[in-house]
Amino acid sequence: MLLRGYGTAGPWEWLTLLLVACAAWASEITFELPDNAKQCFYEEIVQGTKCTLEFQVITGGHYDVDCRLEGPDGSVLYKEMKKQYDSFTFTASRNGTYKFCFSNEFSTFTHKTVYFDFQVGEDPPLFPSENRATALTQMESACVSIHEALKSVIDYQTHFRLREAQGRSRAEDLNTRVAYWSIGEAIILLVVSVGQVFLLKSFFSDKRTTTTHVTS
Amino acid sequence: LALYFHIGEREEKCIIEDIPSDTLVVGNHKVQRWDLHMRDFLESAPGLGMFVTVTSPTSEVLLSKLYGPQGTFTFTSYISGEHIICFQSNSTRFAVIAGSKLRIHLDIRVGEHFLDESGIQAKDKVNEVNIRLENLIEQIHHVTREQEYEREREEKFRKTSEETNSNILWWAIVQTLILISVGIWQIKSLRDFFISKKLV
Image 1 (cartoon, rainbow over the protein chains, first blue to last red):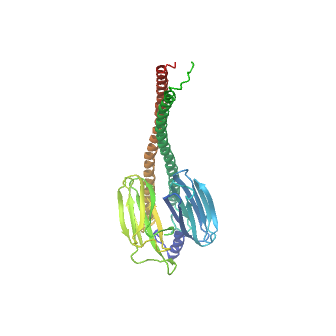
Image 2: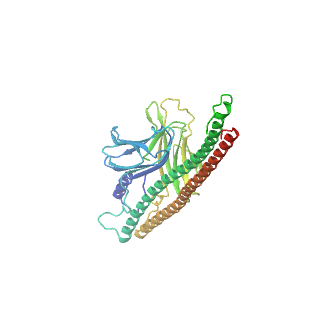
Image 3: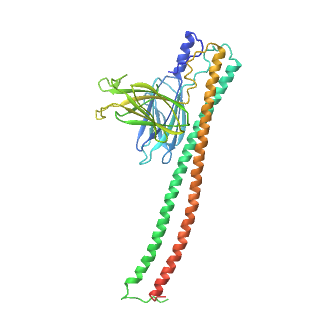
């Protein structure tokens, strides 16, 4: 899928490029998981590929979710309950379809927004048409290091964005809760105080005929 | 198209993309239907297509198109915020047919066209480095746009926190005033009541 032209390349270079390009993949998706729901994703992985699954809950309830990663033979590679954020790296021990599921089944009415990033394989090298025998020129090595640095910047930015989204979601929850609770409390205060006085007055009004003198 | 998931025939599945403005998003998708006879997902079923709908943060529809079983959609965001991309098949069958489900393959790339679109063949070394540098510049622009968006969101976050703070303060004052005034009213009212009943 990631076939691109990198200058002039012979057939062997194309083949290695093809193999390397197919091995590298990263999917990141943010989706909403309704209450009592489970959402599973599948990916076909070649044996020996190093993969990383990272997920984070952005909004909803206690900001936690169950996550489960299974291999092609059904063996559970990773299982965690009620986690807010985690990162799991593994090497595929066999070819096949790997499945990972997020479950919100423990929650009764909050739906969660979950972000996950599933990285399969390493990224292809920037200048693959160079055979490894000759060293890269200074320009090319500078490009490579800038590219790596920028990739890491973008990665940090994504993480920061998610943390900020989570923090903001909590702050907005807090704000609405404070508003409603304060209004409710003020109303209760008024109602109870006024009610107390009328109740007390009613104790003394009815028993006119059988009054017991309250000696002061 | 490696990552896939299953949905029902008429079900709509949405994903959220929180992106800055002027960002290009490219998505590749493929949909397959489960065949009961062959007990496998067909490569392509006749007439099967997918509705892709993209909604901006202001609930404006940016894209709403019907694609075939396999396709690519792109859109550029005008406003920064949460864009919602929804997928729904155009199947008219109901999920009552037992075991019928769809498999959707998905690959979404946000702002990251700096590596894929260079289908331009570089003629020589200088050109190749040139292309690389242009890609790097594009990457840096993406980082800058994200930073700008982050600044906007931090401002919103700070406003919410300050609003909570002033809410708490204001409501605490109001409640204390209510408490004091109601207390005074209570005592006065009861005193007048008891005096009128000749109990005091």
